[in-house]
Image 1 (cartoon, one colour):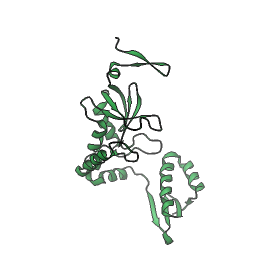
Image 2: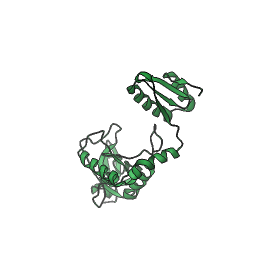
Image 3: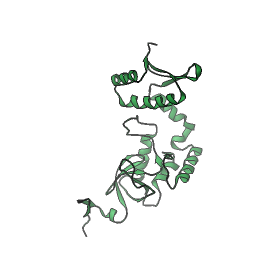
Image 4: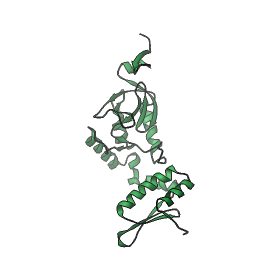
Length: 226
């Protein structure tokens, strides 16, 4: 049998290597700390793991993101892996959801959490949720990776990025105000404040300065001169 042979899928011929036919898949690319591109499968999102963002349309690069990607690259970059599945096999973006196993039997998902390169992703149910929470708690207790120095390393890193902070003020009658640069949004309930923070986080990463100013003014923000 030749080293590569065609397989029919959706009427198209795909060429997979011997590693695919034997139950192992070649890792073509490490996209980031919790996503891989795998031969014959496409993009794979690791189940139960959330690593800091490297590429996100609405978020800047986050603390420990590059370290997490490098850790995964060292473990599986260019190597062969086996996939395991849970209740759901695909997410809403069409990515394959999987537990990824190294050739020595270790689970990549677990290695990321237990070494402090990512968090247990608890927003969605999966079979190993409690186990991954325990792994995260142990990494936190040991101060590994992104848990080092009780979180102060991340805080100092954020300060070093010179990002403009949001300021929160308490007003009379249980109202709140939020300020960003020379724009303010006044007299918000606690729930409205929470939503406004989410909006501001999105807008500041999505819009140009001129578009951001227009959006803020259109959404009820006021421009101040001090």
